[in-house]
Image (cartoon, rainbow, N blue to C red):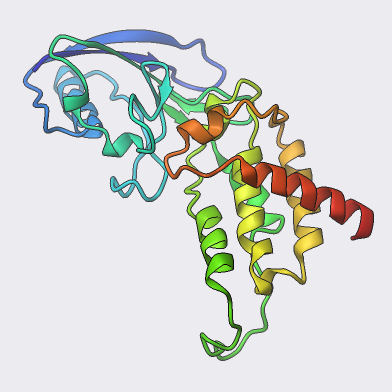
Length: 247
């Protein structure tokens, strides 16, 4: 199998980047997309050229580190998968595949396909946790939580923070990510005490990071690997209004 990869190369944030084409032979349809990039990097090493910088960690669709645009779509041609879950069987022999990093003001390019997503970490630091007393862990069943509430919280908690929602949004909004993190904790009884302050602090940090405003196009929900619903954004907005009025 032969694929021509048209990959964005950029040494540093301030440099002028450009696409560069690489024709790669001896690929198999059972290779994952990242394995194909590994194979290309091995070829570049043997040629004495700089390897392509890209992010990954678990390669199991869990960590969210592998996010890139593939042929103009976040994570590639399939719904609800991460880049590391994509295989070459999704392409045809002789295809040209365009690969580029997330494009967002709040995600500056570090090198090639790697972007700085530390803005997400700073949003989490403003309230994406529950304060608890130190000491022995409480009994697991000490606080009873109904199944509907638990399911709702877990649906929001499924967000892996890959950034596809931001990259695919025409406004570069982080509303889906932020709302998932807020609603996960604010839905649970353990998070109620800090609920109003959490939504105010995390949304304020989102604004400070330079993310755009949500206009409910729904693109974020379509490209989210975990299928996080945009209903979370509506709920976050309602929580924010309540917090400003009564918090």
